[in-house]
Amino acid sequence: MTNPRTEFIDVVGRRRSYLHITPASPRSAAPLLLALHGSSQQGRTMRSFSGRTLDALAERLGADLVYLNGHGRAWNDARRQKLSRAQNADVDDVSFVSTVIDRFDRPTIAVGYSNGGQLLHRILRERPALLAGAVIIAAGLPIDDDFMLVDVDPGPTPVLLLHGTDDPIVPYHGGTPRMLGRATRGMVQSAWATARSYAPAAEPAISREGDVERADWEGVRLVTQLGTGHVIPNRTTAPARLVVGPSHHDIDLGEEIESFFTLAVR
Image (tube, rainbow, N blue to C red; front, top):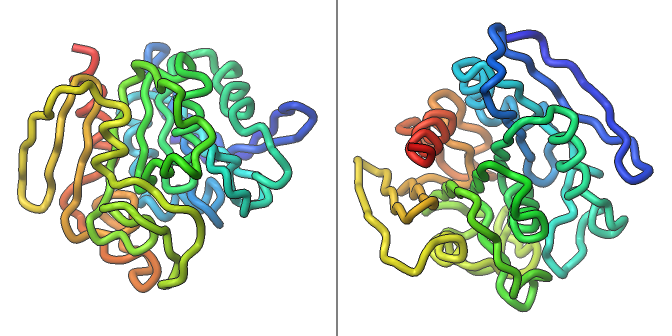
């Protein structure tokens, strides 16, 4: 892949930035991969934190990869509580994502981790036709009292969700998000309730492989990692265990994306 470069784009009167990585052998049929980092991160942080698993996927697919940078290292998601600079400034992050997609003009799979996943909950409801696919990592849907779009249908976009059962920040079974044991912001639903908000009413097909469980509905998959924390699954990194909890190397995010979206188009 080429060396990453920072590029800029004007969105609703703001200059926004993203990290752009180009594959060594681009393919015109490949989707755009778009990554949204977690709170207190930037695109470069997410890239390192995730063991560059999306870089490897982009290279296999011949796809352009962009890591977007939030305002004040956060995103203006659809939670009612406004605790970040991006929310307090009412930054239009939905238009930011949309404008970047327009620049590349190709079907897009967006990957959101934690706060980035919360932004995808918003995008999938406000702009249901914008994405070809969404990947939501460790980001439980807010409870109804804290969600601005509670009655809005997210539409038919294929969604892959991943969450660890020992997540100390965003609890897998729902509840209050915490940082180093201290409550941070409004409550979230469980990983299962979050997945079901996107899934058909039918019961899922469930498979188990070691400490990984996959629940499959039509167009929706929930990947549960038993014993892992608030992490982006990959084969190499185990960042900040005291903060984000344990990491396992039994699955890789890029491989899960490749598998799920390949199955989704067959």
